[in-house]
Image (cartoon, rainbow, N blue to C red):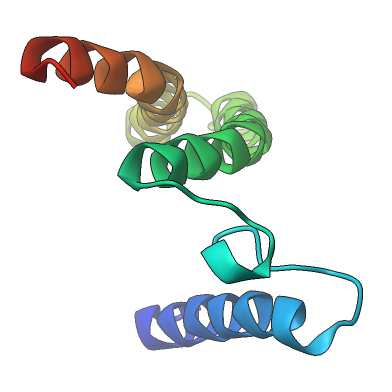
Length: 115
């Protein structure tokens, strides 16, 4: 899949997810303060984003680990394919660690700034 199709799909998904709350009766937009979301500021927004991002990142990381293991098993001893498999596994773990530490990093920043 080319890069422009990937970007188009991401934008379409974001557009559709934004309009689902507006078009579906009984659902409210969790980020809009007047529709029952009750966001009080940037911290609320960040915590909500991270609470949605964490489960999604776990699923993506597990899928990437499976793909990396697949590359590793079927590399046939080719050093380039083994290196690719190692990179996929390492990047999946690093990405999961970054998302996992994001809330802790935010708390450290709040403490330093005295918020």
